[in-house]
Image 1 (cartoon, rainbow, N blue to C red):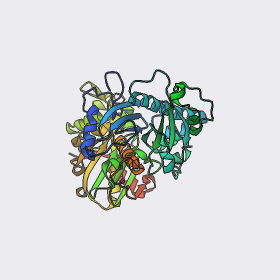
Image 2 (spheres, helix red, strand yellow; image 1 turned 60 degrees about the vertical axis):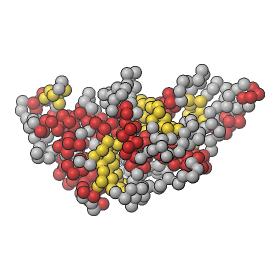
Image 3 (spheres, helix red, strand yellow; image 1 turned 180 degrees about the horizontal axis):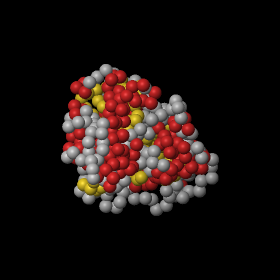
Image 4 (cartoon, one colour; image 1 turned 90 degrees about the horizontal axis):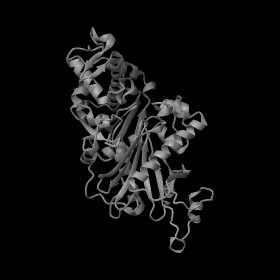
Length: 463
C-alpha cells in the first residue's frame, strides 16, 4: 500500500508495502522470469505509443497497469474489488447473483472501478466527462475485437471465471452447482467510452454513438475515444482466464521443461505443464492465505509464524498448540496466533499439497522432473520457500525450486495484448503468438484419491 492508501499493482491487500518496497518493484521480477526485453515491439494504438493496458480482476483485488512495449509497468492502479460486500469468495458471489439486482450491482461496480483505473492510467483527467461502459459484446469474435477506430485501444482483462461471468452479464449459477460446467470460456468484449459532454441520444450502440459525433474541425466538438475491454479465455469453472494468462506469462506453450504454477488465494489454482500439455486443478484453500480467520496477519506472515512455532516446538505435527497456549493463543512479535488460525493454515496447505500431489501423479512425474515452481501474486512474493517446506505446503524438493512470479495474470494479459496486436498486423515482422498446449482441468472433488491425499497432507511434516 502506498502513502496515499492505494494498493500496489501486485498486492493481495496485505497493506505492508510502501513506495520503493519490493512489492512495488515486482515488474522487475516479472521481467526477469518471463523474458520481456527491449526486442518487444510496441503496438500502435493500445494505451499510447508503444504501450498496452492490462487488468487483473480478482475476487479480492482489481489491478490495472499501463505497460511499455518492453514489458515495464509505467503506471499502476489497484483497488479492492467492491463485490466483497456480497461475500469474500466466488460461491458467495454466485449465490448473491441469483438476485438480478445484486448481479447488476456487482457488474456495474467492477466496471466503475475499471473506468476509474483507465482515468488514472491515462494521465490527468479531462476537464469534463468520465469513462463509461456500454453495449457489451459477448461474441469474442476476432473481427469484433478488431473493430476499433483511429486512436482507440484495448484493455486486456484476465479474471477468474466467476468474475468474467459477472462482468459480461452471464448468469453464474452453473459455476456453483455440480457438475460445475462453464458455458462461456471463450472470453468476450465490452466497450467503454469517455463521455466528453456531447449529448448522446442514440440506442447506446457503439455504431450509433459514433455516427452522432461531428467533425471536430467544423464544429469544435471532439470525437469520443473508445476503449474495448477484451476478456481472455479461461480453462474451466474454477480455473479461469487469470490462470490462462499465467500460463502464457510462464511460457508453458513454449518451454520443454515442466513448470508448476501455483496461485494461492481463497481458491488455490494449480497448473502443471509444458509445451506438450497442461494439467490443472482448483482447490478450496479457504481464506487463510488472504487474511480470513487470520485477519490482520498477512498470509505469508502467517505461514512464517506457523513454521517458526513448529521449529520451536510450540505446535506439534497434528497442528495443536501446546499448553498453556491452546485456549488463549501465543503472542509472537506483537501478533497473537490462535488455535483456529493454525487450523485454517493447516487445512489450506493440505488442499494445495494434495492438489499438487495428484497433478504430479496423473502426469507421472516426480519432483526432480519439475524445473521451476512459480508462486503467483503478492503472497508468493513474500513467502519463504523454507517456510513453505516446513509446513508442508510444498515438498522440500519443490520448495527449493520456488520463485516469486508477481502478478502473472496481469503479465499474461499484457502478453496476450501484445500477441493480439501482433496478429492484427500491429507487429510487422514478428511471429504470431505461440498457442497454449491442450489443457485438462481435473475436478478434485470427483476423484477418489483426493480425499486420501488430503488426509495424508493434513499433518505438518515431522522435523
